[in-house]
Image (cartoon, rainbow, N blue to C red; front, side, top):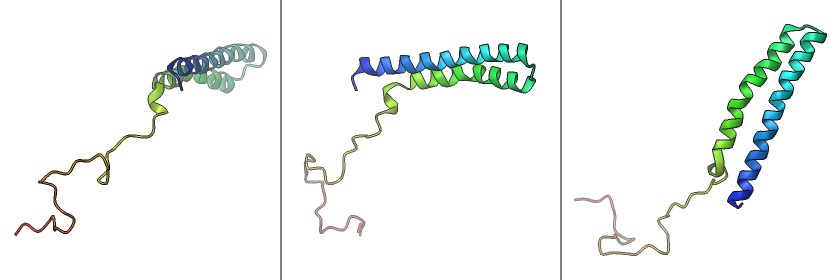
Length: 97
């Protein structure tokens, strides 16, 4: 995924999460004036207070969260150059006597 597309996707996701936060505040205010339920208001305001943390962490995760494969050279790598210090297959590596 190109960098520009990744940045636009993350900005869009952040905007959606911040819109949900504003809606939580508005619904908490309207719910308190119409039907004063302290549990509903505490839940909505709590969600609006915690949401920015998760939004910022999600946005700052960046491209690293999508890169799950790492290039680790293996023992049977064909590009590996053999030297005179490299033991042969028939040698016992642990026989130091």
